[in-house]
Length: 372
Length: 173
Image (cartoon, rainbow over all chains, first blue to last red; front, side):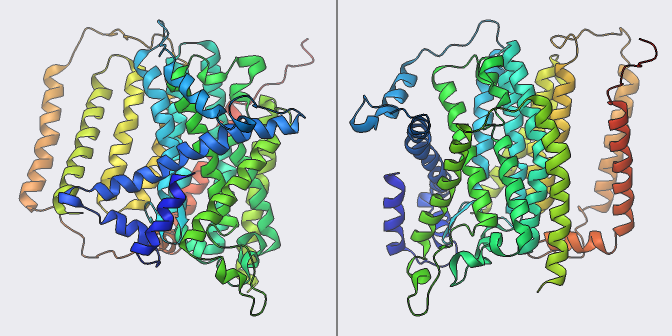
């Protein structure tokens, strides 16, 4: 969290602030013919994931859960335990890299890697600011939904490679859950795409900008938009295996699910992947329904609050803040709701969320055609 | 990016696709074959990107990696004797196999050399093709689209019927 703002504050001085100016300038940075700029472009979200999961992810989650349970949480290392995550990382780095003797060595090692790549790839199409996006694809939203498939393969590799019944059960549950909840999630996002008329993430965000701030967001565009918004939020919880859908890692039944056998850095990579995909789904819901990098503050008359809080640097701030808000809600739900059973999970997906997603799809289409 | 970089990346993906596809065929371990298919599918998706067919590339990832590969992995994981599957037959039809292979490759090469080119389409595509795909599906190809929908719906109902949990017959017990 220290590095990223500095980078963004210094960049607008060097480059313009037109659409995608920063990322295009970075992509064109080729010292000695080497595409070094592209590497830096890919490294920025990586650094962001690492820093955010260290600060807000692990420390924040422990503190928030502690406050919700009327505890203090980590207090020993540093003031209010701020340095606790640094100590954790040092511990994880020093740990012995254990590969169980009966495990499938190759799949055991490769699994966390595929898992992390799967959660990281979607960051390529997230517009972090009006001037910064990794790859401005015209199928950005579709890509972001689809690339989650890689995570599924990573989970299966980790669960199978561990050669442990709990790991395999966790992996099978997780995959069944992700594959099922992809359907309501995709249909709900399709409603957002229908309101925008495009799959380009940057265009979806731009269509929601205006001087009235939050009033232009698609969530307030029509009364129907709340339905796909809620459906996508619930389905996204299941897609990232967060409570109340954390049956793949149900401690009471499966020890720790598909990462039972993992320790040390491999465990850290799996955790990083989980925090990465948590931010990914939070950013997608913010972009499609809550205006992405647009400022939510409205301008009142000549008091142009919206113009003052807009711009490439503010865009980074707003998107990250919106993402962090949804991550906070995910943590909040985790310590509030009990875990679902497997049959309840499937009931919720196929008999509740999917029909309502279809209803919201049809209603959004009718609204888009008949309501100007 | 320069042309050379594109060429290098293209050949990188081509090598990944071919090597992983060869591994799928030659590996004796079924589960490794299935996981190796992941790289084949991704390589093919990358080759679609080089043809400016990004929508098809993403569809390839969604359908093949997200659907078919996961189904395949589930199928493989729940079968017996995954490691080192033994040959069930001693008869290897090497000669007919080679003949058919040579015939197919010969026919393809003959077509390529007689036409001398990969026959680029007359229509050049510019900009986003997603809208074009949507319009074409809903106008020219609406009948095939609906036929496929009905076929898939029938398959879905059939699958649900087959997988249905039979209620125990109360009269018997």
